[in-house]
Structure formats: structure tokens, C-alpha cells
Image (tube, rainbow, N blue to C red):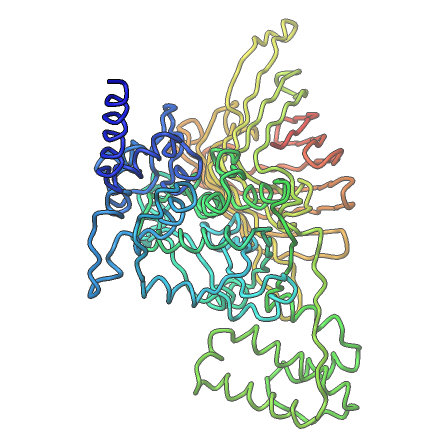
Length: 636
């Protein structure tokens, strides 16, 4: 009897194994190891914690999830994916439509993690294989395109991904025009600046991934916009690179809601790197509000991830360096050519002629970056004449190695967010305390390492002031918003031959009026100014014509005032030690009955004790009042 029972149990086990379908077996194994809860699987689905503490997929296109509940449930999505891979028949006339071809990175992941997944049939995917062959990635780098003040969406920089056909960063740099790039950006549907800002903050645009030849991005950023490019080469294994390329293919038909401050280009580039190796955990460590500088800093801080940093200067940087190499005789010859951009006789030795003509060719590339791409344009014909003249000299040009400005490496900059605490005295309230928070990112007095040294780029800066009680003067304690800036930009372009442009500033927010227009009333304000600036060694100076619009019914019977007049600033920077400025302004107020003129002057000193800890002193004199304060700044 025991023998019969044993044979019965053995037969039952044999039957159960024999009749278990591949689908059931694969799902069973995935459940046994809880694959749906793994970091790798959730990264492929772009599952992240939301504001209420739960997890959900960030992709918003329906085709990205096989299960109707896949956006909220990674377990159901895993089972639906396995089912799609196993049960979908292979149609040789529609190979690229098979789920395995649409989601090759998921397919690879299942093969890696599940032994039973070997039963899933391989499918030949012509389009994916063609894409993979075209990319031919042996290395991956995160590219930081430097700050571009003239375009709001790029004022804080931009990040994209480059797929190098060479494993070695230095060798790859020689042939980078053959590489491919992956970019994530918003599909902008409005030209209205206000709507653009509002929709960008609220997720009103769709964000999409796109792959393209890398030279397109070089042309856009380096050539047209004169932005230097920094390559952060990642230390990835071949199989990790393959995961990223495969996942990029999956994202080609997917869209996400684009949020200017959170789910932006920087954030999603980190998501791609996390797919390479879940242990990096980059998207788990990035700040909730993320900007491009946060991305490259996180890459640099992650042990074993950063291989090397290389630098590609813009056409403007190249030209400036060329000009710096010319001696007086050569510079005079170049200036003569540049005046009319005509090829003239050069009474110089061959070597000097070569340097002048090389500089002239770079000048044409910089000045007419778009026009020289047109075959029959007059600029193209003009450049060809210079190229022929240069070739006739019979001298080979040495490679121009523009030194990488290490102090401008974006990952070396101070942190983007800042809080400040201060204690001061004023003519009206005696002692007071100040509390400040700034979301991003830099002002002219901050440590300039890793930043745009000629710009202020601030967003969401708010200052609170607490006036302490003074019984002797009959002043009670009070708390108020002293200043608020939604967005503040100061773009300084020092006057320089061939590179001069207007300097300008803009500020939108609100401030407490201290110049006598009203007694400490708070007024929404808009400030716009433009002018010229100069730089001499460590000293930066600007002079601007400025307009201030202040809105408060206590300023005039019209409820606003318009101030027009000059303002100036002199800024001294002593390396990483301190920054010090002296500034002043005078305004003629229009549409007011009283206080038809106002002025302000003052000085501020900022001592850079550490990269993310500064100390400052500030004094400001207004018409009828003054303020003095000591501050401590902490960047995080």
C-alpha cells in the first residue's frame, strides 16, 4: 500500500510539472522572488513615490502599461507583461509590433532575473536592431549645457545624454560628431511667456524623449547659443549600457507630464541612469525640486559612477581663445579683415598669416553660425575664400586645445537652495531679525565657482523681517514679508570688441517701500533695466537705465507709481575669499503727488568661508531711512 501511495504521489507530481504552462511557470517564479517589488522592475516602469506617500508610474501614455492598473500596481503590470511576451503570436509581417520588440529592456530584465524566462521566444526586431546598431554605444555620458540666460527654460542649464562609439572618453571626444544623443524636453504649445511659465510649472506640457545625432545638439547649444558643453562620462559596464539603449527605445513612443521644477530634463536623465544599475538610486536621492546642476553634482557624488569630465568649448569660447593667442601685429591684421570681412593681402610671415586666417575662419563660424550651413549663402562663399587662402599656405594647423576652465565645472558650484538668517538695525525700528529662503540658484555676490559669474539667476526668493519691540520709541514688535522675488535675472555682458551686447536685468515680485513713498507699505513690483557693463580683472561694473513699477494705493491716487532713472554697481571679487559691491540708483517718480524723486545707495560684503556657508554684511541708505544687517548664508 505504501508503495502504491508513493507511486500515486510521484505520478501526480509528474503530471503537474508536465501540464504547467510556460506562462504559469514564469509568473510563479516571479512571485516566488517578488520580482515586481525589485528596484530594477520599478525603474523600468518609472515608479516613484508621490506626494501622499504612495507609489505610481510617472508615464502618462496608455501604451506604456500592458495592464489597465499597471500605472498603480507593478505586480499586475509584471504579470501582464509576461503574458504579452508569452502569448502574443509572432507575425513575420509585423515583427516590430510584437511586445518583445516594443519593450526590449523589460524582456532583457526578465531573462536576467528568471530562469524560466528562457521559455519566452526570442523575436527578431528589425527596427530596434537598426536603432541599436546606429547608436552603437560603448560609453555613455551626461552632458551639461551651460547656462543660457536669454531663454528662460535654459537659464539654469540643460542636461542630455550622449552615447559614445568609443569607450575611452578622450578618444571618443575626437569623434563625437558621429555619436548619438538622447534628449528630454517639453512639447511647447504656446508662444505666450506667461502661459509658458504657468503651464511649465503646472505640468501643462507633454514631455517626450527623442534620440538624434549628437552634432545637432552641438550645433544648437555650442554653435548657435555659444554654450560650453561639459561631458560627465559614466563608468558603466557593457550590459548596463545595453539596458539604457534598450530602455530609450521603449520611451520613444511614451510621454510624461513635463514639470519645469520636478519632472524635467535633469530628473529623467537620472531615471535613465538608474535603469543601468538600480543600486545607484539617483532618483531616490535627488531633491524634490531639481535643476541641472543638482544632476551633475549627484553624478559626481555617487561612488564609482563618474569616470571622467571632458570639456567642449563653444564657438565663442574658441574665438576668444584664438584672439588671445595673437600678437599685436597679428591682431592688427585680423582687425582689418574683420572690419569688412574681406580677404586682404597679408604682409606677414607664413606662420603669422596662418594664425590670422585661422582666427578669421573661426570668426566667420561664430558670427554666421546659421548662414554658413546654407550652401549658396554669401557667408559660405566668403568662408570658402578664406579656406582656400589658408590651404595655399601649405602649413598644417596644430590642434587648438582650449584649456578647460576648471573653476566653471558645474558640479563644483554651491548648492542651489539657500537659507539665510540675519540680525540688523534700522533708522525706523532699531533692532530686527531677518529670515530668507531662496529656491534657486545664484546671485552676483555668491561664490562664483561652477556658476555663471556674470549673472544673477534667482527664483522664489522670499525674505521675512521681524522688528523687535522698542518701548523707548513706542515701537511694538511686528512681522512682515520684506521682499519677495518670483524671478530675478541680471545678465552682465562686459563690453568687448566683437562680443559686446546689452546688459540687462529684470525682477518680478514685491517689496516693502522704504524710500518715503509710503510708510513701510508692501507693493507688488516689476523692475526692468538695460545698459552697458565693463570688466577689468576682478572688477565688474555696470551702468543701466532702469524702470520700477510699484503698485499700492498708498503710493498715489492712481494706485501705482513709475520710477525712471539710472543705476550703477561696482563689484569686486577676490577669488574664493570674498565678494564686495557698491551700488546706487536714482529715480524720477511719475504719476505721484509727493516724493517725486527717490534714491538708494549702499554696499554689501560677502565672505566665502566654505563652499556652502557664507557670511555677509550689508548697508543700504534710502531717502529718509537706512538699514544695516549681518547675515549667515547656508546653501543646501
